[in-house]
Structure formats: C-alpha cells, structure tokens
Length: 61
Image (spheres, rainbow, N blue to C red):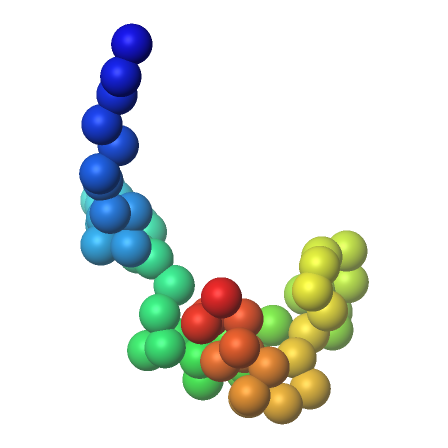
C-alpha cells in the first residue's frame, strides 16, 4: 500500500485558548538563548548554549 506524506510540519500551528504551538524558527533564537539556562537544561540534551551561534546552528538543523 502506498501512502503520500507530503505534509510540511514546518508550517503547522496548533492553538488553543491558552497555548499556541509553532515550529522552531530563527525568530526565537534570542528567546531560546536567554531562557535555556543551565538550570532549565540540567537534564536535557543539548546543554544550555554558551553562544547565540550555537542556538542558530540548532535551529538550522
């Protein structure tokens, strides 16, 4: 059986009364760099970014 999965998840937004989920983009780099501190990312991979360029590399991936 052949299926066609030509759906672009980079443009999907899911919203509710109190939340809006949007794909990650370069628009969020400054926010990610500021908010993803070592305390927030203690049990996460990757660790908190040391430079904004690390965030941009992650978002580009």
